Length: 178
Image (cartoon, rainbow, N blue to C red; front, side, top):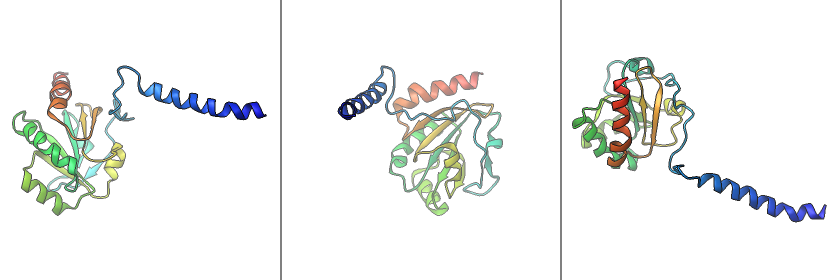
């Protein structure tokens, strides 16, 4: 019994060391948060549009490649990401779908009026139910959806020019070809 007690710290150390060794494997990006929704259909959602008009739903996105961006007026990283989204909308003519996450309609509208609106359509997820179904950890998060309505990529945190050039745009070109 006493020997077992002495082995307990050694066993605990080995478990912790094994956990860290798995996390440090070559080729693994520690910043990438896995998503159970990759290659799965979009979750069902039906959100009112920020500026009125028809609701935005998973059904309304079928048949097209879509980039869905969760944002909020109170989100500082969203403000950092905003110029990148504006460039994607104007220079790349990328039709971005925005989802105002846990934000007051007036606050979202005010923020977009101030910094520009890169979105072709914006849904309002006031209580965060759609974000929960998507598995949103926090805003901003961006999802790439293929023509069949399956999520192909998830970007956690603000998009930057490097990520857009190396990951997002090549993926969109590939998805639009198929």
